[in-house]
Structure formats: C-alpha cells, structure tokens
Length: 595
Image (cartoon, rainbow, N blue to C red; front, side, top):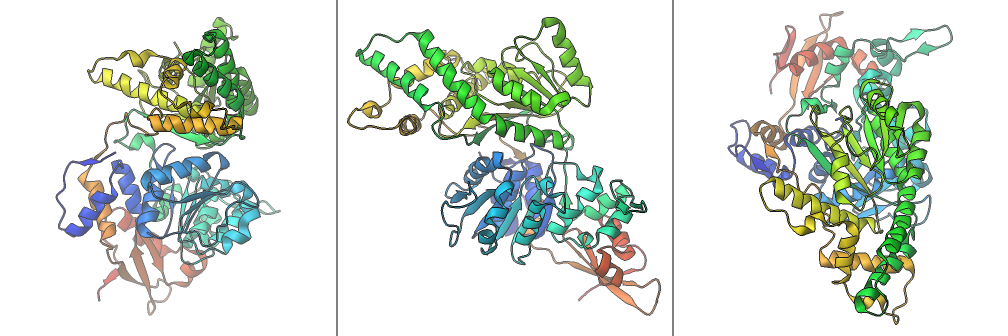
C-alpha cells in the first residue's frame, strides 16, 4: 500500500535528505501514525498509549527497525496476539525472521538469532534466564497495562529485561491510564523516566495519597492537568475521536493458534468427496451431507478459538470500549457470556423477539454493559448497535453476505467514529481458505460501490468456491502412493490454495490509500534531522548564589537540582516544561545557555 502526500516540498527547518527519508519511512502509514513514529524515534524509551485500532503495533515496528536496523528484537505480548505480531512485522519487512516462543522450554535456540522474538507474558518468567542473556536492540511491551501491578511477577520480569542500558524500550497500551495515575508509575519505571524514581513523591502529587494510619492509600487522582503536561515527552496518547485521517471502517485478519489437527479429518473427507465426484469415481456427493460435515469442522474450529477471543475482549473492556462479538455456534457464545456475566448481553436464535430490543437498549445506553454477544444470523441483521466501535468475529461464516450485514450493526447511520472489525483466523486450517474467499468478495463488492459491474463470483458461498477450487488443484494430495496424516493433508491443500492465488493475504486491500499531511512529514523529518537539545539555567529559590542546569530534549526536561535527582520532579522542571510544551518561551528566571 503506497502513501500519497499533499506536498513533497521540504521546509527550511529540515534538510532535503531528512525530508526524503521521512517520505520513505511514511510509506503505507496514516498521518497520525507518522507522527507516532516521529515521537518514538525522538527518544530511546517511551510509552505509546493510543486508543485501540490506531496502529500502535505498526508504529512501534517501523520506529524500532529505523532506530536499530539490526536486531535482535523482543516483543512481549498477550498469547492471543503473538501470531498477529509476526504477521504485522512481516507486512513491514517481508524478509524479517520471526521466532514465536510457544512453551516454557524447548523450541528453536534464541542465542545468535538476530531477528524478532515474540513471547507472551505468561511464560516470560520461565524463559527469563535465556532472554536476559541476549543483547537485545529493542524491547516492545504490548498491552503494557499488564504490568501495572508493580508487585506482580510479570512486572518484575519485565523490569529485569529493561535493566540493560542499550536497547530501545517501547511500552504500548490503549488503556486510559490517567484515570488512575498510580497505574502509570510502573510504566514510567519501565522506560526509566525521572518521575519513576519515587512512588511516594509521585503518589502524593498525582494520586491524592493519604495515610490511613495503616499505610498509604494511593488509588485516587490529583493534579491531573499538571500530570498530563509532565507526561509530555515520554507518553503519547491519541483518541480515535481526535484522529481525523481514519477510514470509517478498518477490517483486519487476526491469526490465532489452535491445537494441531483440529477438524482436519472432516475437511479432508469433504474435499476428497468433491474430488472423487468430479473425477467420476464415485456418485456425486450429497450437498446436504457435505454441509453437515463442514459445519462440524467449523464448530470445532470456532470452539478452539474462543479463548483467544475472550482475551481480546478483555483488552477491549479494559480500554473502555464496547464491542460486538459474533459466532455462528452456541457453545462459543455461551462461554463468552458466562465469562463476562452482567457486563454483556446475549442474543441467539432462541431469544424471544419481544426481548431483543431490550437487549439492544441495554447495550446502547447502559455503561456497565460492554459486550454484545450474538449469533451471526440472529444478531447480524436489523439491529442498531452504534455504541460499539469494535466488531469481532470469533469464527467465519461460509456465507459472505452474513459478515457484511453483521459488520454494519455498528457501521451505520448514527455511528460517529471509525469502526474496527477483527476476524479471527485459525492458522493452518480451512479458515485460511475462507479468509481468501471473504477478502476477494469484499474487493468485488467495493468495486461495485466504485461503479464497476458485479460478477457472478461475488455471490457464491464458500462451499461453491471450494467446489471451484477442486477443479483447479493438483491430484497429488489424493495420491495413494503419497500417504499423509489428516494434518499433513490439510497443509498440502492450503499450499495448493496459496499456489492458485485463492487465498490472498493482503490486509486492508479495500481501504483507501492514506493521505499524509505536510505537518506529519515535517514532524518526522525534524526527528530524523536529530535536533540538538536546549540548555537553560535557573537560579535556586532558596539560595540565590546557586543555579541549576535544565535540559530540554525530545519534549522532556531534566534538572540538576537535588529535588529532581531524588523525586524525578521539581518546581524548576515543572514550570519550564509547562511553558515549552505549550509552545511558549521560557518563563522569566530561566536563561537560555548557548555554546
């Protein structure tokens, strides 16, 4: 995906070479993402706290590769998104080598590997000795609010990794941490910000800390406007409603891992039946029987994916958003509804018509109800669910129009923000073929919207596409002289699909190309030009004979006074930072120092 720009004329503030570098680095990014990359490149350690769906993953990958062209790099994330990280890394750099750490021991050796290593929080401690022994060039902590409990093991393990002086450290989170300032403190420690030096000093100033007689109570909030200013330079947060360059609907395909061999026997039987029917070696298969076999396979895959879906939904709720979750099957829906309890509503084919509007109203108006759990057919039509900006498909329906109708429960008149649609695709299963079909159909429908004619292929269901595939694929996968297990057979089938080009894995192919603003490009070019830090001198308030040196760099201020050295904050730094962050000159009493 290429990026277009409104202007390619550099500014007198930056060199031509830096501007051209900024253009190359911005390829495929939205303007807000370019600004995010500029922010990350401006400092070695930072917190990126954008809302979910604004592309924190892509921004951190681009920034890491540019700041440290040679690895190794470590990504620590929830288990449910490990394979999505691999996909995103290889979309940025198709030649990137990735290793996903799947267990507490074993697997490929990491020593000497110079690519990307991806590990989940749950097994971080079990591989810590090995991970600590590696000279990482970049560390990325996704969903970093997982580390907000400073006494948890995962927090201690993360801090150990960050004891190395050399690597970049980026903490990514979509949770609005300023609602509870004490949750920010562990992340400030992770990125070694000055405010992370003394929790008691931080808590007294920003957590409305009070001593109860038994200890300090720090779950409040105080001086939030000042805190927001002081976070300028170490944390960047953009909300969706503040970002103007987003398309109205963003569709993404999220790869998830399920146990090997899931539903492979059923899919093999279906395809071999179709191949035998086409070859005339057996009677033409009964379509109803084949559909029943396919339904059984789809249900097994859907049930195997539900734990990943629950983890994603937990993140959505944690980040203050509402979501609609669709499945074609009752078992995943019931498991999700049981997990979220009173914070969700459930609509299936068995839900009486008289009760359905009440469920919709609860979701739309009750802030405690965060999740709308629905059968794709029962809840995919006729409902207005614009309170959601996240739509998640646990499994893939084999009738493409069911998906488009379900997506539009949130993406419809009355929706004022961008809607993120996530499709969970079980890697190494027939899901990959279904994904290719759905992407192709989506592109065909987009072509109709753009004024082109609708081809007959756009209306076929997935079974019809599978029948068409059988006419094109090699007979080698059914060769009796090449015996294979069911899992090996499905793998061979998917390779045939890939060879045929039936499963294009392009993401967002139906999205419009981003248009970059000149301001975004200049912001990145300025960082690439490596502007020098600014030095100021301020006289001590308690002793006029003393003065302290303040350094302003990458949006942050440090001071040489004893208070700053101990607490990570002081009145000198606060006053200067507040002025400079607002674009004002240094206040009276602050003298700029020139070489």
